[in-house]
Length: 284
Length: 284
Image (cartoon, rainbow over all chains, first blue to last red; front, side, top):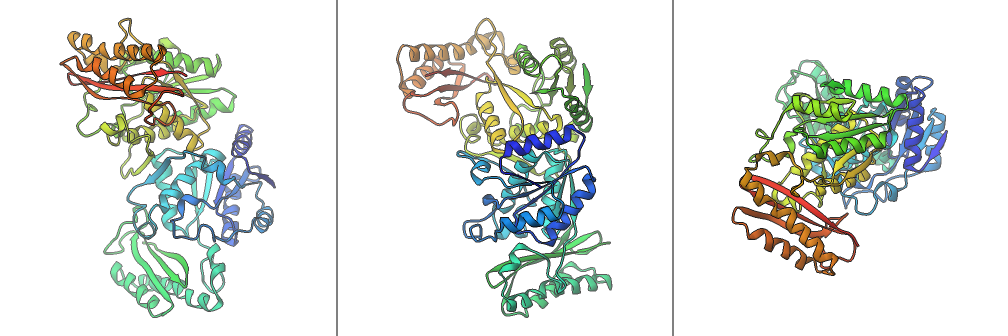
């Protein structure tokens, strides 16, 4: 596995690979890798083929963190990440220098309107603008034909698909289903912050979403009823606070009254000082 | 010369050319071509080389026009444009369908902050956001290594250079000096709207900028004095109204007091219902 820190070196390597007919698959991450990321790498490899070039980036992107958020304390362990990435068959690991990504006088932002303002965006103003901007930057540096994102960050996934369509990026976006620990908790780099007690409380989130899905499968089509039942379960826990629970359409993320087409239950909670998100798709 | 209307066909053609080692040079225009555009094509050819692929697009981009601006009446003559482009040695002319460029649910915009709000941006809110967005779209469709812009639209040129740097587009931006008619008027597709009388009045714009440059060369370094002298000349004309005259730094477009580094005098006026812009660089 090759380590690259220089953006122009990354671009040159990708373009050389493409000129030789290799498919470049890209997995952008903020590091502190877990099995969910490894699934993304595997999906990238499958799409790119045995001779493809699988690139994984690690960049904790400052522009997607609010001033009171956890940018400085976001978990980082580059040594461990390098070993995991190499073990997963990553060909190139790209770890740009922050100063190279945001040079003096930086002032260009990409915004996917409407989709970025609701749900997690309402709670975290500017978050998805930062995500969209860094994804465009990374696409331009890595020049992939394929990019892989996890569906745990469902809103992000929808925003990136919209961005790629709207801005005509010649990149195929692959979404990978959420990977969970055996106890049901969706993998997240931030899980490491949960105390054992908090982790037990956090399990209410996947449990509540699962119950919602079962209710839907038994015939419950009312979006407010589904969201309400999730909230009821979550709010029983004194040490868990609900940011939002919403049932929305899968593409436009618009509030719906009845689940008549594919929808998704999106939820965000706080357990102690840790913010967790999860979702479950209701397929019609 | 090949005519392409389909975005994915354009992308495929450019990528095939690049895979064969050809350099793709791109000249985005809104059509109604004049000798200024031809200079851009020539510059593109020179950079791309004899074996390069020179692509020119024609697209009157709705998102860069305000609701009260001249989108519907912007001059158009595709037949004439095709002949001129072919004569200038364009290899591919790309004329996208408006519905393909802005599909239903479009909501992604690129904005170069600060640079887009001043000067022409103050007069035309959203204009440069529309320009930045369509340039990103066209870059992603045409996949050029080189793109050529005229310096008559000086603020646009600065914004695009900033955008390319900020978003890491692997595209080299070439700026081409303004082409003028023998009477001094900068070429613009909108000049066609001027009556003969209006055209005589419009000549005050290049004349005033020329006088400003001469004053600078004789030792005048005060930016307000230079801008003031330009305004004085322009305001003598009853049928000409001044939108702005500003002396700013060439890269940041920031107001300056003294011309101690390279600066540019930017001016916008209205003659009748036609808005004209022009500029002159003051090199230190």
